Length: 106
Image 1 (cartoon, rainbow, N blue to C red):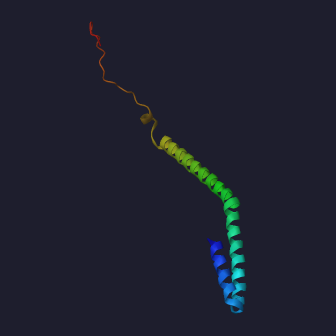
Image 2: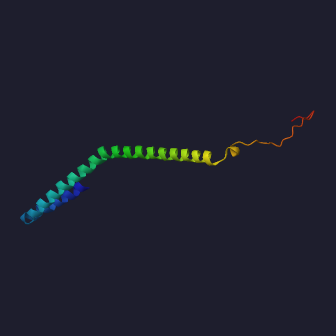
Image 3: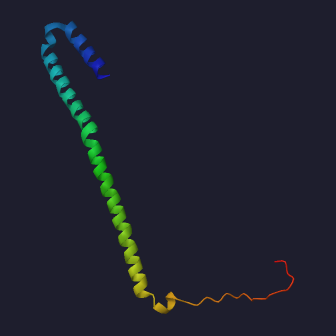
């Protein structure tokens, strides 16, 4: 797309003659500057971005594991500290009568 724009500008400049010689220089500088910026963006996307994305992912996962681990530890510590031991263990009484019926198929 940009090549089409540059070719169009070059064609216009060639048809106008010497009146736009200065404009030709400005356009050439602009093309060179834009080309360099696009090359920098390509370099960042192909080389710098994967490294930054990898580090961001590692930091995010490490933070998540740390927060969940810390929350679990604090919950367990406070629960064990503030709930009396008598409430930790209770006897269960299942109210089931053990009747043995003779001849019952079940």
